Length: 366
Image (cartoon, rainbow, N blue to C red; front, side):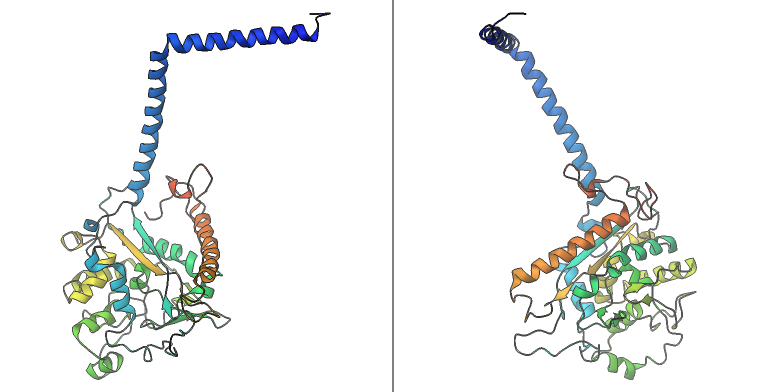
């Protein structure tokens, strides 16, 4: 009011504040049961929403040992398959073109495998029983894996040690071992026309032990038709499969994809080693259903040690810092490719319908 002193105004304010506190306390004491029930209801509702989101996230990536022909149990870890296929079984590093110039505890640059990226491919409709191995889906998988292979930082850290499959090489001369445990590798192969040149003498040259396990390796990875012949409509020996480190992801003939899948299923019974390798890519009921509802790749992201280090354990924290920076860049490229957005409130991996090739709501595979 006009002419009211400042002290009087302060007194009126204090009285109003006192009345507000009095009302607040009175409501708490008279209606504490109702307020407790309201607060409890809010907590339950928020918990239900959080659990629902968590269940969704788990549903998108949940796997178990029963999903695969070869499980991820202790007896058949992915690394077992990788080490068997990559290294010896009689195949020397020298014959494979690998680097063996290690002296004492000093290791040649990036000749030891280091970090891996497992990509699991399944239908957007998780209860779908359709075969996930189709020409169109393989093209999509191939393009997704190219996000790593074509990344400018990949040649800086890639594994380049002994490889039975050979190497890719960039224009600046950097080479990387071809990805072996990739479902794209199993189908994107250049097939020879004649298996007769791979007789026992040739097999003994390639492998110290030319057992049926090694012949299966040739049929699975090298495009050599030594067991079940050449798949129908298979890419020829002159097929262009790589440009630099990037895979050429032309759509394969549907007839070839179907016949190749049938061959792989037959090879499951060829030997225990063949089952260990092929079963990594196939779902548990593949032999009964003659189709696989999901598949996966285990990509070797990096090798060690880096340039200027004697081993993977030499100044380990320094090396780790370099890897972490490069991995973050690679992950951002994957997010961009799939249209994933990361924020403080929501993980990029919580997206329900990723964007593929700029199309909102497109599944990674059909």
